[in-house]
Image (tube, rainbow, N blue to C red; front, side, top):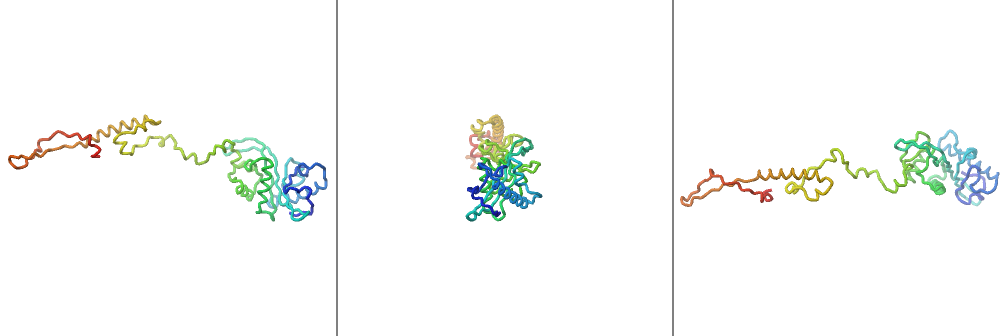
Length: 292
C-alpha cells in the first residue's frame, strides 16, 4: 500500500517494530509528527486487513495498539529514493488462555498469540509473508508451533502448513487455534517417537500371547532345540517337547513292520509258504529317519 510519507529515517531495515507508543521500539525522542504518520498507516493497513479477512470491523488500529501491550511488525519496501510502500503487518501479543490438549485436560497459561497478519494483495505470493514471520520468530526466540492464532483464515492455515508443517488442530472452544505440537515437550521431540511405533511390538495378552504350534518337522522328530528352552517361554517349551516325544513314540510304534519269511524247500524243489508261522517283529526305531 502506497503512502505519501518519507519513512527513510525509520525504515533503515525492511521491518519496523512498533509498540504502544506508536513509535519504533528503541526510538529515543518524542516525535508527534512521526506518531501521526504511523497512526495513519496502521489505520489504513488495519482496515485493509479486516476487509481481506471479511471481518465486521478492523482488529488493528492505532487506538487499539495504544491501549494494549501488543507489538506490531510493519514491513516496508523502498521503490525509489525517498519513496516507500507498506507491504504488510503482523501484530503479536501475550494473552492468558485456558488451553485444552488433545486428551481434554485443561490448563491456564500465558501464550504468545498471533493477532493479525496481513500482506497487501499486490505483494502476496512473493515470499514477503514468510520473511515477516521468520523475523518475528527470531526476534522472540520462539517457534511457530508455540503460538496461538486468533481466528485464522483458511489462507493463513495453509500458510502455516506449507512453511511450518502445522496442520493438526486442537479444538479450544474459542477463537484461538492451537496445534498438537504446542503440547510437545523437548523430551518428546528428542526421543524421536513416531506414531507407527505401536505397530512394531505385538501385544502379550489374549490370543496374541498364546504359544504357537511347532511347524518344523525337525522339531517334531527330535524335540525343541536347546536355544528354545533358554528364553522367557522355557516352561511352555518343556511342555511342548514332552508332548512331542510321547507323540513320536506312538508314531514310531505304528510303523513297525511284520516280516514274514518264505522258506524254500530244497529237497522237494518247490516253495513252501510259512504264513502260519509269524516271525518276531523287527524294531526299526533306528531307521525312522529313512522311513520318514
